Each structure stands twice: as C-alpha cells, then as structure tokens.
Amino acid sequence: MRNFLFLSSVLLLLSINVNGQDEKLKANYIYNIVKYINWPESYQTGDFVIGVLGSSKVTPELKKIAATKKVTSQKISVIEFNSTDEISKCNVLFINDLSSGLIKVVVTKLGYSPTLIIGESRGLAITGAGINFVTKGDALGFEINKISIRQKGLQVDSKLKALAL
Image (cartoon, rainbow, N blue to C red; front, side):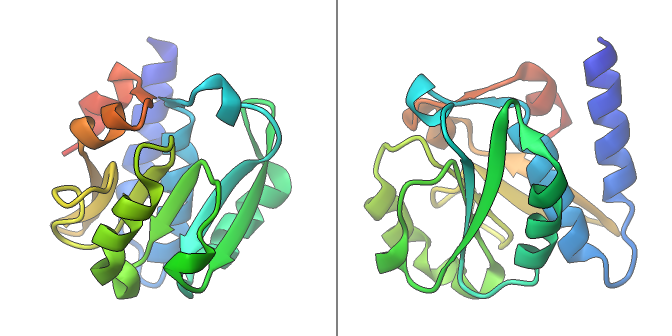
C-alpha cells in the first residue's frame, strides 16, 4: 500500500504540466513506469536498455536519469536509434511524435520480443504501443494497451494499471 501511495504521489506530481518541462516529465514517467513492469528473466540481466527511435529531447533527460538511477539492480543504458533498421534488443523503446508513423514497422520488427513500446502520439496504444502518453487538460497521463503488453510476455503491476487513464 505504501508503494502504491508513493507511486501515485510521484505520478501526480509529475503530471503537473510545467511549460518546457514535458521532456523531463516524460523521462521521469518512463523511469517510474518501468519499475512496475516485470520482464522475463532473460531481460533482467545486464543493462536495462531504453531505446529511443529518432532524435528526441527526451533522450538527454533519460541519460540524466541513467547516470544516477537503476532499474532494480540493472544499470540503465540509453540508446538512440536513427532508423527502424538500427533497433536492437532493448527493454523499452520510446517512439517520439515525429517517429510515430513508423509504429507498424516497429511492431512487426519487434514481434513478440519483450520490449515495452512507449509512445507519445494519439492512437499509438491502439496500434501497438504498450504505454502511450496522453494529455488530459494540462496534465500528462498515460494509457495502457494490456493486450500488447501481455503478448510480449510482460507483466504490469495492478498498481500501475489503476493509475492509467
């Protein structure tokens, strides 16, 4: 219960929209969300890899987090992929708004590999992203595609599901 209250508080604080801070908020959301996702054992060793498709202002914010934080005991590594051909094994793949048109290519390329796809464009949760950032009023929130996540062999903590829009 304490963890749930903590997560709720963190995400509520993060959802307060501060001009120019969207990228920082999204990076913090990604970091906090992944703590409530369970990956298969083969993805729980080595670095916890967060891939970013295309150039994104979220990348430097994720790198700041990676410099000081871990996911469970895994060091965080942030990799920017310039094209879908470059995408390799990662725990998370963030698809920015400019790359959102490539979602079908990404979903096909990754298949059922346990990579959590996180997007930031309207409709991405319907087309294959497991998590998609959405804006409700002035607040940043997220929606979850439970089917996509389940097909990839990932498990979402019920506490995170309760916070989704």
